[in-house]
Length: 259
Length: 248
Image 1 (cartoon, chains in turn red, brown):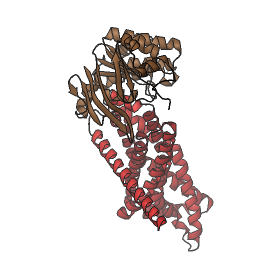
Image 2 (spheres, chains in turn cyan, red; image 1 turned 30 degrees about the horizontal axis):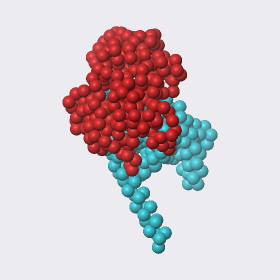
Image 3 (tube, chains in turn green, brown; image 1 turned 120 degrees about the vertical axis):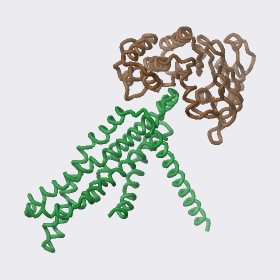
Image 4 (cartoon, helix red, strand yellow; image 1 turned 45 degrees about the horizontal axis):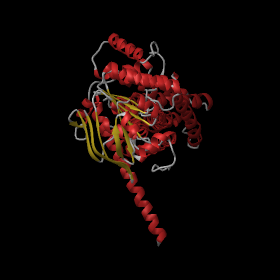
Protein backbone atom coordinates (compact mmCIF):
# COMPACT_ATOMS: atom_id res chain seq x y z
CA UNK A 1 0.00 0.00 0.00
CA UNK A 2 2.85 2.32 0.89
CA UNK A 3 4.48 1.61 -2.45
CA UNK A 4 1.32 2.49 -4.31
CA UNK A 5 1.03 5.71 -2.32
CA UNK A 6 4.65 6.58 -3.15
CA UNK A 7 4.06 5.82 -6.81
CA UNK A 8 0.96 8.00 -6.90
CA UNK A 9 2.83 10.76 -5.10
CA UNK A 10 5.64 10.59 -7.66
CA UNK A 11 3.13 10.58 -10.51
CA UNK A 12 1.37 13.60 -9.07
CA UNK A 13 4.62 15.51 -8.61
CA UNK A 14 5.75 14.69 -12.14
CA UNK A 15 2.42 15.83 -13.60
CA UNK A 16 2.60 19.09 -11.67
CA UNK A 17 6.21 19.66 -12.74
CA UNK A 18 5.37 19.03 -16.41
CA UNK A 19 2.35 21.34 -16.23
CA UNK A 20 4.40 24.09 -14.59
CA UNK A 21 7.14 23.77 -17.21
CA UNK A 22 4.58 23.83 -20.04
CA UNK A 23 3.01 26.95 -18.54
CA UNK A 24 6.38 28.68 -18.27
CA UNK A 25 7.20 27.86 -21.88
CA UNK A 26 3.86 29.29 -23.02
CA UNK A 27 4.47 32.51 -21.04
CA UNK A 28 7.98 32.68 -22.53
CA UNK A 29 6.48 32.30 -26.02
CA UNK A 30 3.93 35.07 -25.37
CA UNK A 31 6.68 37.45 -24.24
CA UNK A 32 8.61 36.59 -27.43
CA UNK A 33 5.53 37.41 -29.53
CA UNK A 34 5.11 40.73 -27.72
CA UNK A 35 8.75 41.73 -28.33
CA UNK A 36 8.59 40.52 -31.94
CA UNK A 37 6.03 43.20 -32.70
CA UNK A 38 7.88 46.07 -30.99
CA UNK A 39 10.29 48.21 -33.01
CA UNK A 40 13.13 48.66 -33.63
CA UNK A 41 13.61 45.46 -35.61
CA UNK A 42 17.15 44.11 -35.52
CA UNK A 43 17.45 42.81 -39.09
CA UNK A 44 21.20 42.21 -38.79
CA UNK A 45 20.69 39.86 -35.83
CA UNK A 46 17.88 38.02 -37.64
CA UNK A 47 19.99 37.45 -40.77
CA UNK A 48 22.91 36.28 -38.64
CA UNK A 49 20.69 33.67 -36.98
CA UNK A 50 19.14 32.65 -40.31
CA UNK A 51 22.64 31.99 -41.61
CA UNK A 52 23.47 29.93 -38.52
CA UNK A 53 20.23 27.91 -38.42
CA UNK A 54 19.74 27.59 -42.17
CA UNK A 55 22.84 27.98 -44.29
CA UNK A 56 25.15 26.16 -41.92
CA UNK A 57 22.73 23.21 -41.59
CA UNK A 58 22.53 22.57 -45.33
CA UNK A 59 25.31 19.99 -45.43
CA UNK A 60 23.82 17.82 -42.69
CA UNK A 61 20.32 18.17 -44.18
CA UNK A 62 21.56 17.16 -47.65
CA UNK A 63 23.30 14.14 -46.15
CA UNK A 64 20.26 13.10 -44.13
CA UNK A 65 17.75 13.71 -46.92
CA UNK A 66 19.68 11.97 -49.67
CA UNK A 67 20.46 8.84 -47.67
CA UNK A 68 16.89 8.67 -46.36
CA UNK A 69 15.57 8.77 -49.94
CA UNK A 70 18.06 6.13 -51.04
CA UNK A 71 17.24 3.76 -48.18
CA UNK A 72 13.51 4.22 -48.68
CA UNK A 73 13.91 3.35 -52.35
CA UNK A 74 15.86 0.20 -51.49
CA UNK A 75 13.43 -0.96 -48.82
CA UNK A 76 10.21 -0.18 -50.69
CA UNK A 77 11.45 -1.80 -53.90
CA UNK A 78 11.45 -5.27 -52.39
CA UNK A 79 7.88 -4.90 -51.12
CA UNK A 80 6.55 -3.48 -54.36
CA UNK A 81 8.30 -6.15 -56.44
CA UNK A 82 6.02 -8.78 -54.86
CA UNK A 83 3.09 -7.04 -56.59
CA UNK A 84 5.02 -5.99 -59.73
CA UNK A 85 4.53 -2.40 -58.68
CA UNK A 86 8.18 -1.28 -58.69
CA UNK A 87 7.19 1.80 -60.60
CA UNK A 88 5.55 3.15 -57.42
CA UNK A 89 8.88 3.39 -55.57
CA UNK A 90 9.41 7.01 -56.64
CA UNK A 91 5.89 8.00 -55.62
CA UNK A 92 6.25 6.36 -52.23
CA UNK A 93 9.53 8.08 -51.51
CA UNK A 94 8.27 11.44 -52.77
CA UNK A 95 5.10 11.26 -50.67
CA UNK A 96 7.03 10.01 -47.65
CA UNK A 97 9.63 12.76 -47.92
CA UNK A 98 7.27 15.68 -48.57
CA UNK A 99 4.63 14.72 -46.03
CA UNK A 100 6.70 13.23 -43.22
CA UNK A 101 10.35 12.45 -43.41
CA UNK A 102 11.50 15.72 -44.95
CA UNK A 103 10.07 17.96 -42.22
CA UNK A 104 10.62 15.56 -39.31
CA UNK A 105 14.17 14.44 -40.04
CA UNK A 106 15.23 17.97 -40.98
CA UNK A 107 13.81 19.26 -37.71
CA UNK A 108 15.57 16.54 -35.73
CA UNK A 109 18.90 17.32 -37.41
CA UNK A 110 18.49 21.05 -36.82
CA UNK A 111 17.58 20.34 -33.18
CA UNK A 112 20.79 18.41 -32.72
CA UNK A 113 22.86 21.11 -34.39
CA UNK A 114 21.24 24.50 -33.90
CA UNK A 115 18.83 23.86 -31.03
CA UNK A 116 21.60 22.52 -28.82
CA UNK A 117 23.86 25.43 -29.81
CA UNK A 118 21.15 27.93 -28.87
CA UNK A 119 20.73 26.31 -25.46
CA UNK A 120 24.49 26.16 -24.88
CA UNK A 121 25.16 29.73 -26.00
CA UNK A 122 22.30 31.28 -24.03
CA UNK A 123 23.07 29.09 -21.02
CA UNK A 124 26.68 30.26 -21.05
CA UNK A 125 25.51 33.86 -21.35
CA UNK A 126 23.24 33.33 -18.36
CA UNK A 127 25.90 31.83 -16.06
CA UNK A 128 28.52 34.46 -17.06
CA UNK A 129 26.02 37.29 -16.30
CA UNK A 130 25.91 38.52 -19.91
CA UNK A 131 22.09 38.40 -19.77
CA UNK A 132 22.15 40.38 -16.51
CA UNK A 133 24.45 42.87 -18.26
CA UNK A 134 21.79 43.36 -20.97
CA UNK A 135 19.14 44.08 -18.35
CA UNK A 136 21.56 46.43 -16.52
CA UNK A 137 22.02 48.37 -19.78
CA UNK A 138 18.23 48.72 -20.11
CA UNK A 139 18.22 46.35 -23.11
CA UNK A 140 15.76 43.48 -23.22
CA UNK A 141 17.43 40.08 -23.77
CA UNK A 142 14.27 38.59 -25.30
CA UNK A 143 14.35 41.26 -28.03
CA UNK A 144 18.09 40.95 -28.67
CA UNK A 145 18.73 37.24 -28.24
CA UNK A 146 15.52 35.23 -28.49
CA UNK A 147 13.38 36.93 -31.15
CA UNK A 148 16.04 36.63 -33.90
CA UNK A 149 16.53 32.93 -33.14
CA UNK A 150 12.81 32.13 -33.19
CA UNK A 151 12.26 34.03 -36.45
CA UNK A 152 15.25 32.24 -37.97
CA UNK A 153 13.88 28.83 -36.91
CA UNK A 154 10.41 29.46 -38.35
CA UNK A 155 11.73 30.83 -41.66
CA UNK A 156 14.65 28.48 -42.33
CA UNK A 157 13.12 25.10 -41.48
CA UNK A 158 10.77 25.16 -44.50
CA UNK A 159 13.68 26.10 -46.79
CA UNK A 160 15.78 23.27 -45.39
CA UNK A 161 12.84 20.90 -45.78
CA UNK A 162 12.58 21.79 -49.47
CA UNK A 163 16.26 20.92 -49.83
CA UNK A 164 15.75 17.67 -47.92
CA UNK A 165 12.72 16.69 -50.02
CA UNK A 166 14.58 17.41 -53.24
CA UNK A 167 17.75 15.50 -52.39
CA UNK A 168 15.68 12.65 -50.98
CA UNK A 169 13.77 12.26 -54.25
CA UNK A 170 16.97 12.60 -56.27
CA UNK A 171 18.60 9.97 -54.05
CA UNK A 172 15.70 7.60 -54.61
CA UNK A 173 15.97 8.22 -58.38
CA UNK A 174 19.67 7.33 -58.36
CA UNK A 175 18.97 4.08 -56.49
CA UNK A 176 15.69 3.24 -58.22
CA UNK A 177 16.67 4.00 -61.79
CA UNK A 178 20.44 3.61 -61.53
CA UNK A 179 20.69 0.50 -59.39
CA UNK A 180 17.31 -1.19 -59.46
CA UNK A 181 16.55 -0.59 -63.14
CA UNK A 182 13.15 1.04 -62.69
CA UNK A 183 12.05 2.83 -65.84
CA UNK A 184 13.12 6.47 -65.58
CA UNK A 185 10.10 7.96 -67.37
CA UNK A 186 7.63 5.91 -65.31
CA UNK A 187 9.47 6.79 -62.10
CA UNK A 188 9.19 10.54 -62.72
CA UNK A 189 5.65 10.47 -64.21
CA UNK A 190 4.25 8.65 -61.20
CA UNK A 191 5.77 11.19 -58.85
CA UNK A 192 4.19 14.05 -60.80
CA UNK A 193 0.86 12.21 -60.97
CA UNK A 194 0.53 11.30 -57.29
CA UNK A 195 2.24 14.10 -55.37
CA UNK A 196 -0.04 17.15 -54.91
CA UNK A 197 0.97 20.69 -54.03
CA UNK A 198 -0.97 20.09 -50.79
CA UNK A 199 1.46 17.33 -49.85
CA UNK A 200 4.38 19.71 -50.28
CA UNK A 201 2.66 22.72 -48.71
CA UNK A 202 1.43 20.87 -45.63
CA UNK A 203 4.91 19.45 -45.16
CA UNK A 204 6.30 22.98 -45.18
CA UNK A 205 3.69 24.16 -42.66
CA UNK A 206 4.82 21.31 -40.41
CA UNK A 207 8.42 22.39 -40.95
CA UNK A 208 7.66 25.98 -39.87
CA UNK A 209 5.94 24.68 -36.73
CA UNK A 210 8.88 22.40 -35.98
CA UNK A 211 11.23 25.36 -36.51
CA UNK A 212 9.31 27.22 -33.83
CA UNK A 213 9.65 24.25 -31.47
CA UNK A 214 13.41 23.90 -32.06
CA UNK A 215 14.10 27.59 -31.40
CA UNK A 216 11.60 28.03 -28.57
CA UNK A 217 12.77 25.01 -26.58
CA UNK A 218 16.48 25.68 -27.19
CA UNK A 219 16.13 29.32 -26.16
CA UNK A 220 13.90 28.56 -23.16
CA UNK A 221 16.29 25.97 -21.73
CA UNK A 222 19.35 28.16 -22.32
CA UNK A 223 17.74 31.35 -21.00
CA UNK A 224 16.70 29.62 -17.77
CA UNK A 225 19.98 27.84 -17.09
CA UNK A 226 21.21 27.78 -13.52
CA UNK A 227 24.27 26.23 -11.92
CA UNK A 228 27.45 26.93 -13.88
CA UNK A 229 28.98 24.61 -16.45
CA UNK A 230 26.99 21.61 -15.23
CA UNK A 231 23.81 23.62 -15.66
CA UNK A 232 24.73 24.53 -19.23
CA UNK A 233 25.35 20.86 -20.07
CA UNK A 234 22.05 19.85 -18.49
CA UNK A 235 20.15 22.59 -20.33
CA UNK A 236 21.65 21.56 -23.67
CA UNK A 237 20.73 17.89 -23.20
CA UNK A 238 17.21 18.75 -22.00
CA UNK A 239 16.72 21.08 -24.96
CA UNK A 240 17.53 18.36 -27.49
CA UNK A 241 15.42 15.72 -25.76
CA UNK A 242 12.38 17.95 -25.18
CA UNK A 243 12.59 19.42 -28.67
CA UNK A 244 12.84 15.98 -30.31
CA UNK A 245 9.92 14.56 -28.33
CA UNK A 246 7.82 17.65 -29.03
CA UNK A 247 8.52 17.37 -32.77
CA UNK A 248 7.48 13.71 -32.88
CA UNK A 249 4.35 14.21 -30.77
CA UNK A 250 3.22 17.33 -32.63
CA UNK A 251 3.90 15.57 -35.93
CA UNK A 252 1.18 13.06 -35.10
CA UNK A 253 -1.39 15.74 -34.32
CA UNK A 254 -0.47 17.90 -37.31
CA UNK A 255 -0.68 14.89 -39.62
CA UNK A 256 -4.10 13.98 -38.21
CA UNK A 257 -5.35 17.53 -38.80
CA UNK A 258 -3.81 18.19 -42.20
CA UNK A 259 -3.89 14.88 -44.04
CA UNK B 1 20.40 59.51 -4.00
CA UNK B 2 20.33 55.76 -3.33
CA UNK B 3 18.45 54.47 -0.30
CA UNK B 4 17.99 50.84 0.67
CA UNK B 5 15.21 50.58 3.22
CA UNK B 6 14.65 47.39 5.22
CA UNK B 7 15.60 45.01 2.39
CA UNK B 8 14.71 41.36 2.93
CA UNK B 9 15.54 38.59 0.46
CA UNK B 10 15.43 34.83 0.72
CA UNK B 11 16.20 32.12 -1.85
CA UNK B 12 14.02 29.20 -0.81
CA UNK B 13 14.63 28.58 2.89
CA UNK B 14 17.94 30.47 2.84
CA UNK B 15 17.54 34.07 4.09
CA UNK B 16 20.28 36.20 2.59
CA UNK B 17 19.22 39.76 3.48
CA UNK B 18 17.39 40.31 6.74
CA UNK B 19 16.63 44.02 6.88
CA UNK B 20 19.36 46.01 5.16
CA UNK B 21 19.27 49.78 5.66
CA UNK B 22 21.79 51.86 3.73
CA UNK B 23 22.00 55.42 2.41
CA UNK B 24 24.58 55.86 -0.34
CA UNK B 25 25.92 59.38 -0.72
CA UNK B 26 25.89 61.02 -4.12
CA UNK B 27 29.25 61.81 -5.71
CA UNK B 28 31.18 59.47 -3.40
CA UNK B 29 32.51 55.93 -3.47
CA UNK B 30 30.79 53.60 -1.02
CA UNK B 31 32.15 50.10 -0.47
CA UNK B 32 30.11 47.25 0.91
CA UNK B 33 32.36 44.59 2.41
CA UNK B 34 31.75 41.25 4.03
CA UNK B 35 32.95 37.70 3.96
CA UNK B 36 32.42 35.41 0.95
CA UNK B 37 28.83 34.26 0.45
CA UNK B 38 27.41 36.97 2.69
CA UNK B 39 25.09 38.39 0.00
CA UNK B 40 27.06 41.41 -1.21
CA UNK B 41 26.40 40.70 -4.93
CA UNK B 42 22.74 39.99 -4.15
CA UNK B 43 22.51 43.38 -2.42
CA UNK B 44 24.22 45.12 -5.34
CA UNK B 45 21.80 43.59 -7.82
CA UNK B 46 18.90 45.02 -5.79
CA UNK B 47 20.25 48.53 -6.41
CA UNK B 48 19.84 48.21 -10.19
CA UNK B 49 16.65 46.13 -10.01
CA UNK B 50 18.14 42.86 -11.26
CA UNK B 51 16.72 41.26 -8.12
CA UNK B 52 13.48 42.33 -6.46
CA UNK B 53 13.36 42.25 -2.64
CA UNK B 54 10.80 40.14 -0.79
CA UNK B 55 10.20 43.22 1.38
CA UNK B 56 11.61 46.72 1.60
CA UNK B 57 12.27 49.58 -0.75
CA UNK B 58 15.03 50.62 -3.12
CA UNK B 59 14.86 54.37 -3.70
CA UNK B 60 16.85 55.88 -6.59
CA UNK B 61 16.48 59.67 -6.89
CA UNK B 62 13.17 59.58 -4.96
CA UNK B 63 11.74 56.75 -7.11
CA UNK B 64 10.97 53.41 -5.45
CA UNK B 65 12.17 51.02 -8.17
CA UNK B 66 10.45 48.04 -6.56
CA UNK B 67 7.14 49.56 -7.59
CA UNK B 68 7.79 50.78 -11.14
CA UNK B 69 6.98 48.89 -14.34
CA UNK B 70 9.62 47.66 -16.78
CA UNK B 71 9.63 50.87 -18.82
CA UNK B 72 10.14 52.97 -15.69
CA UNK B 73 12.86 50.63 -14.46
CA UNK B 74 14.70 50.88 -17.78
CA UNK B 75 14.64 54.69 -17.53
CA UNK B 76 16.24 54.42 -14.08
CA UNK B 77 18.80 51.90 -15.37
CA UNK B 78 20.02 54.41 -17.95
CA UNK B 79 21.52 56.35 -15.03
CA UNK B 80 23.65 53.34 -14.15
CA UNK B 81 26.72 51.58 -15.42
CA UNK B 82 27.71 48.23 -13.96
CA UNK B 83 30.98 46.31 -13.93
CA UNK B 84 30.22 42.64 -13.28
CA UNK B 85 32.59 40.28 -11.51
CA UNK B 86 33.96 38.75 -14.72
CA UNK B 87 33.12 41.86 -16.80
CA UNK B 88 30.22 40.00 -18.58
CA UNK B 89 31.49 41.09 -22.01
CA UNK B 90 29.45 39.73 -24.95
CA UNK B 91 31.49 36.84 -26.38
CA UNK B 92 30.17 37.25 -29.91
CA UNK B 93 31.22 40.91 -30.14
CA UNK B 94 34.52 42.72 -30.45
CA UNK B 95 35.79 45.08 -27.76
CA UNK B 96 34.58 48.07 -29.80
CA UNK B 97 31.12 46.53 -30.29
CA UNK B 98 30.87 45.78 -26.58
CA UNK B 99 31.68 49.36 -25.55
CA UNK B 100 29.43 50.76 -28.30
CA UNK B 101 26.48 48.53 -27.36
CA UNK B 102 24.68 50.92 -24.94
CA UNK B 103 25.32 53.85 -27.31
CA UNK B 104 23.74 52.01 -30.26
CA UNK B 105 20.89 50.85 -28.04
CA UNK B 106 19.89 54.21 -26.56
CA UNK B 107 21.40 57.06 -28.59
CA UNK B 108 20.79 58.15 -32.17
CA UNK B 109 24.42 58.79 -33.07
CA UNK B 110 26.29 58.44 -36.34
CA UNK B 111 28.83 55.62 -36.56
CA UNK B 112 31.71 58.12 -36.58
CA UNK B 113 30.51 59.66 -33.31
CA UNK B 114 30.12 56.23 -31.75
CA UNK B 115 33.64 55.24 -32.82
CA UNK B 116 35.02 58.45 -31.28
CA UNK B 117 33.25 57.87 -27.97
CA UNK B 118 34.41 54.25 -27.88
CA UNK B 119 38.01 55.30 -28.57
CA UNK B 120 37.81 57.94 -25.85
CA UNK B 121 36.41 55.52 -23.28
CA UNK B 122 39.06 52.91 -24.08
CA UNK B 123 41.73 55.62 -23.79
CA UNK B 124 40.32 56.54 -20.34
CA UNK B 125 40.88 52.95 -19.17
CA UNK B 126 44.33 52.69 -20.75
CA UNK B 127 43.37 50.37 -23.63
CA UNK B 128 43.64 52.43 -26.81
CA UNK B 129 43.53 50.65 -30.15
CA UNK B 130 42.04 47.28 -29.18
CA UNK B 131 38.57 47.86 -30.65
CA UNK B 132 38.86 44.95 -33.06
CA UNK B 133 39.95 42.33 -30.54
CA UNK B 134 37.44 39.70 -29.44
CA UNK B 135 36.72 39.57 -25.73
CA UNK B 136 38.04 36.00 -25.57
CA UNK B 137 41.49 37.30 -26.53
CA UNK B 138 41.76 39.53 -23.45
CA UNK B 139 43.42 38.91 -20.10
CA UNK B 140 41.41 39.21 -16.88
CA UNK B 141 42.62 42.74 -16.20
CA UNK B 142 41.89 43.84 -19.76
CA UNK B 143 38.39 42.39 -19.55
CA UNK B 144 37.69 44.37 -16.38
CA UNK B 145 38.93 47.58 -18.00
CA UNK B 146 36.84 47.02 -21.14
CA UNK B 147 33.89 46.26 -18.87
CA UNK B 148 34.49 49.59 -17.12
CA UNK B 149 34.75 51.40 -20.46
CA UNK B 150 31.36 49.92 -21.40
CA UNK B 151 29.91 50.84 -18.00
CA UNK B 152 30.84 54.51 -18.46
CA UNK B 153 30.03 54.70 -22.20
CA UNK B 154 26.73 56.50 -21.60
CA UNK B 155 28.10 58.97 -18.99
CA UNK B 156 26.16 57.38 -16.14
CA UNK B 157 25.61 59.05 -12.79
CA UNK B 158 26.08 55.85 -10.80
CA UNK B 159 28.51 52.98 -11.39
CA UNK B 160 28.26 49.65 -9.58
CA UNK B 161 31.35 47.45 -9.21
CA UNK B 162 30.98 43.77 -8.34
CA UNK B 163 34.31 42.51 -6.96
CA UNK B 164 36.40 44.61 -9.37
CA UNK B 165 39.77 43.27 -8.21
CA UNK B 166 38.95 39.61 -7.55
CA UNK B 167 41.27 37.26 -9.40
CA UNK B 168 43.80 39.93 -10.38
CA UNK B 169 47.50 40.11 -9.56
CA UNK B 170 48.65 42.85 -7.14
CA UNK B 171 49.87 45.18 -9.90
CA UNK B 172 46.65 44.91 -11.90
CA UNK B 173 44.67 45.31 -8.65
CA UNK B 174 46.43 48.59 -7.99
CA UNK B 175 45.82 49.67 -11.60
CA UNK B 176 42.08 48.96 -11.27
CA UNK B 177 41.95 50.77 -7.92
CA UNK B 178 43.55 53.85 -9.48
CA UNK B 179 41.19 53.59 -12.46
CA UNK B 180 38.17 53.59 -10.15
CA UNK B 181 39.51 56.63 -8.26
CA UNK B 182 40.31 58.52 -11.49
CA UNK B 183 36.99 57.60 -13.14
CA UNK B 184 35.02 58.64 -10.07
CA UNK B 185 36.87 61.99 -9.94
CA UNK B 186 36.84 62.71 -13.69
CA UNK B 187 33.23 61.77 -14.33
CA UNK B 188 31.88 62.89 -10.88
CA UNK B 189 30.29 59.52 -10.30
CA UNK B 190 28.50 57.90 -7.41
CA UNK B 191 30.24 54.55 -7.07
CA UNK B 192 29.13 51.48 -5.13
CA UNK B 193 31.82 48.82 -4.79
CA UNK B 194 31.30 45.29 -3.54
CA UNK B 195 34.49 43.65 -2.37
CA UNK B 196 36.24 41.64 0.28
CA UNK B 197 39.64 43.03 -0.78
CA UNK B 198 40.40 45.23 2.23
CA UNK B 199 43.42 46.94 0.70
CA UNK B 200 41.37 48.13 -2.28
CA UNK B 201 38.37 49.09 -0.14
CA UNK B 202 40.36 51.36 2.15
CA UNK B 203 42.20 52.91 -0.77
CA UNK B 204 39.24 53.87 -2.95
CA UNK B 205 36.29 54.44 -0.58
CA UNK B 206 34.84 57.55 1.04
CA UNK B 207 32.41 55.43 3.05
CA UNK B 208 32.43 51.73 3.99
CA UNK B 209 29.55 49.48 5.07
CA UNK B 210 29.99 46.04 6.64
CA UNK B 211 27.42 43.38 5.70
CA UNK B 212 27.14 40.57 8.22
CA UNK B 213 24.40 37.97 8.60
CA UNK B 214 22.06 39.84 6.30
CA UNK B 215 22.35 43.28 7.91
CA UNK B 216 24.61 46.33 7.75
CA UNK B 217 26.30 46.29 11.15
CA UNK B 218 28.62 49.27 10.69
CA UNK B 219 28.79 52.24 8.31
CA UNK B 220 31.33 55.04 8.32
CA UNK B 221 34.48 56.56 6.87
CA UNK B 222 37.55 54.34 6.50
CA UNK B 223 39.04 55.82 9.72
CA UNK B 224 35.80 55.21 11.64
CA UNK B 225 35.68 51.62 10.40
CA UNK B 226 39.32 51.01 11.42
CA UNK B 227 38.65 52.49 14.86
CA UNK B 228 35.46 50.46 15.44
CA UNK B 229 35.40 48.12 18.44
CA UNK B 230 32.62 45.95 16.94
CA UNK B 231 34.03 42.40 17.47
CA UNK B 232 32.78 41.21 14.06
CA UNK B 233 34.51 44.10 12.33
CA UNK B 234 37.67 43.67 14.38
CA UNK B 235 37.86 39.97 13.45
CA UNK B 236 37.14 40.66 9.75
CA UNK B 237 39.77 43.40 9.47
CA UNK B 238 42.40 41.35 11.31
CA UNK B 239 41.69 38.20 9.27
CA UNK B 240 41.60 36.09 12.44
CA UNK B 241 39.77 32.77 12.52
CA UNK B 242 38.97 33.39 16.20
CA UNK B 243 35.89 35.47 16.90
CA UNK B 244 32.17 35.74 16.27
CA UNK B 245 32.48 35.09 12.51
CA UNK B 246 32.36 31.32 12.09
CA UNK B 247 33.98 29.56 9.17
CA UNK B 248 31.30 27.41 7.49
